[in-house]
Structures are given as structure tokens and as C-alpha cells.
Image (cartoon, rainbow, N blue to C red; front, side):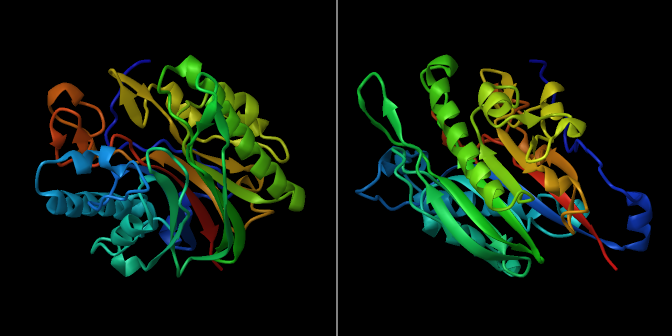
Length: 353
């Protein structure tokens, strides 16, 4: 894959029935951001005997654990505060998170000075993941009102050992975004540990579970407004996304009850959200259902999608130069960065009376 760093570049897919320029001049619109961020091993400094948290990077540090934790929280909060803010003049209305240890770290994140004024609510369930990491959802209480939330187990068997392979649950949250009923599924699918081919079936199983949740929502309401967001550990053109979820790159090809992937075109340019051995991948994605593409079914309509990649999130030196400025490395421990993944987001626009 061609390597490209396009700092602070947003890949825009405009689907407006009116001129955005005209709307901006008259200020007769409202933009909300829906985002996702893999926050790279956001663990606290307390050893939990019921989890394998002692293997987390922060617990392997020799000293200054409290200071590192505080800096890590601050870094994550600063990034979240800036996602989509240039257009919406606000931090995300809703943001899904992965690689959080527990609800406590999410509470600390929401209470950070960068975010506390936003009054974020939290939805989190403990999952059985063997690494002790979960997914979670933050939402601005002034913008989103949860109606229901549920966690859905992905039951896998390690074929070599014949034992349960514990991984992250999928989190489903339904609620009203300024009056519109929406559904958000937060994902962190099984990794490629052991190789992409050997681990592929696990992600395809995750996709099947995701498809089951989507089908259930659409069975209850064919016009359900659905976001399935997360670190899929697969690219937009992998079987899990293309063949099981049937996500489309071309908006014109999205059928009734279909799914649109607004970041697939971005992926084809060689830009990604995370890298391995000098190669970009776009594992972090936000997929949306067709009613969000049409004002006939929603007061909010899809405006654009992007990877949030300002210069400060990119490493400027060393072996990781040009790639995400991460928090931890095996060799150096905490290096003061942010995450080994870049955040992704979509924005919805609403015309005001």
C-alpha cells in the first residue's frame, strides 16, 4: 500500500441537497459529530486480580505510574475535544472508545478539564476479554438521550486448544440524538495475532454478530438509523466488511437496508488509521445505514467523514516517524504520545428553521 501522510486533511463526501457554502453564510444549520477512538491501553494503575492488567504497558513501568496515567488521560481528552470541532464548534456528540480497562478510566477521561464542561455520560459494560479491555460510549447529555443499552458476547473457540477464546463484547446503544432515534454499535473485533489468515475466521464471526444486530434493528424498523463504529482489525475491502456486512463504497449502490462505508475511498488512497511494519491499515471505521443518507427519513443527514490526523498526532522522529504518535513502546515504555490509532468520525448536518 502506498504510504501517505496528509496532515490535517479531511476526506469529504458531501451529500447535501442545499449549498453548504450558502448554509454557512446564513448559519442556518447544525452539525453533530459521531466519532470513534482506539485509546491504546487506557489502564489505571491499580492491579485487578480478576484481570490480566499487570501485562498492560502502564503496569510494567518502574516508576511515576500516577504521573503517566494523568498524562495519558489528559492526552486522550485533548484529542477527543478537538475531533470535528472545526466544523461543529463542539467536541463529538457521541464517541465510541476501545481499549479501556474499566468504567473508572472512562470517568476520569470525562472529568478531565478538556472535557468536563461537555458533561459526558458514560455507557460501559465489563467484557470477558483476556487482555482486560472493553469498549465504551461517551455522549453529551445535552445532545443525546439514551433509551437502551446492551452488551453482546462474541463466543469463539480456540480450535488449537479447544477452549474458549475470550474477546470484546459488542455494545449496542439506542437513543435520541436531538429528537432523532439512532442506534450505535461499538466494536473492537479480534486482532490479527498469529497472522491475518489464521485469525480471519474470528473477525468474520464478529461481523456475523454485527450483522445479526443490524438485521434485528432493521426488522423492528426498516428505516433504522444505524452507526456501526469501531476498530474492526480489518480493512474496508476485507471479507468481514465487504461480504458479510456488505458495506458499499459507492453511495449510489447502497440499497434499502444497506450499509455505506464513507471511508473506503480514503483507504484506497493509501491513508490509514494505524500502521504495522511501515504499512498503513484502515482498521478504524464508521459504517452507516441508508436512512442517514436521506433527509426524508432523518432530520440529520450525513455530511462528511474523515480521519482526524492533525500534525501533533503524527510521530516526527525515530523508527515510527510519519505514523501515529503512540503512548507506549515495548522498548521505551511511555513516550508521551497519544495512541497507535488515529480517530475517525462522521458528521451529520441539520438545516435549521
